[in-house]
Amino acid sequence: MKLLIVTVVDQFEKEVLRLFKESSIESYSGSDIEGYKNGSSFMMNASWFPSEKSGADSLLFFSFTEDKKIDIFFSLVAQFNEKLETNNPIHAVVVPIERSI
Figure 1 (cartoon, one colour):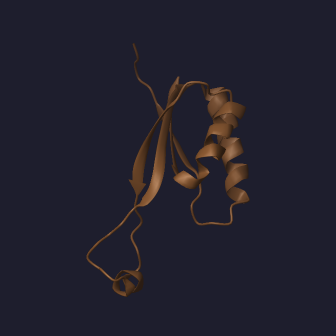
Figure 2 (figure 1 turned 30 degrees about the horizontal axis):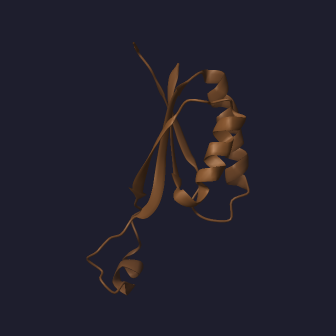
């Protein structure tokens, strides 16, 4: 069993939920988060209030699941990201679990 962590901008929530379903990942948790990127100095200076930084509405999902389901999920995410026309791909990482109870 491993821990799958996924972050995505909120516009792709339905797609991530569909990918979980297609991967047979039935149990997961999610939370609203704000995502940040370091903006270029030009963009920071062009802002009306350059000292204020705002994040993008994003989501974080995580699931304790099996390797074979994660492999399917990663394959589907790679296919999704290849077709993406924005600079906001789905990000996913896997963390091994040493012990669980």
